[in-house]
Image 1 (cartoon, rainbow, N blue to C red):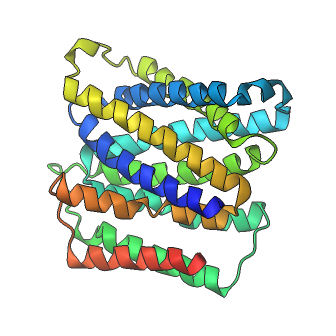
Image 2: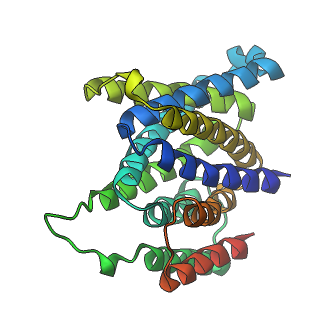
Image 3: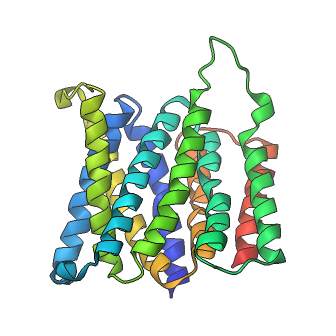
Length: 285
């Protein structure tokens, strides 16, 4: 059953990227992240209350709480860098770098979680790594004072923290209801997101945010909430080295929507890269 939740997570994560790209277009990316996190926080705790999982809050151990806290802060950092990257770079280039966290997560899960590693895992990692390289098109970058390539650095940092999020979350969700774990993590994502807003003295003039931005940010928040709920349910029951790659198939959804809605074109080389990433994931499955 966990595999269905993993695919559900991938679908909603893909939708999130597109909604966020549209929503963050005309406002500060840190503020956009904080607004989205607020929506996720409300929806996550509402579900916990409705399902009765909140009654088990007192049963959460200190170890579980610490790992969920660390996972939450890692998620916050990943989001902050991801939406910085989205603000300056194309979805079709930012997303593959962010999804490359799959490879690092697989390595960390083999080392720290003791999950099995074999030649199939190695082939999958090679395919995903090469596919990511082809989608990014690093050789096509034109570094100059007139070109803002900072999105690349932000995307790489996003991938690193996303990988740490998965490993810490896997440990933290082992002995707790997955919905409750998601809600607890979201608290710390919420804190880190809004803390950055205030530390950066971000303009909080909400009246300047258009209806379109509000609508897409709220929808993005709900999509993120659904994605997380599915993701941590899958992560609780399945191996991180497989759940995470499936979740990263959201790149397919993202690329499709970016082509039709954002009119971002995908080169032949990038398309081949996408096929390699998908192939590597299905080898694991």
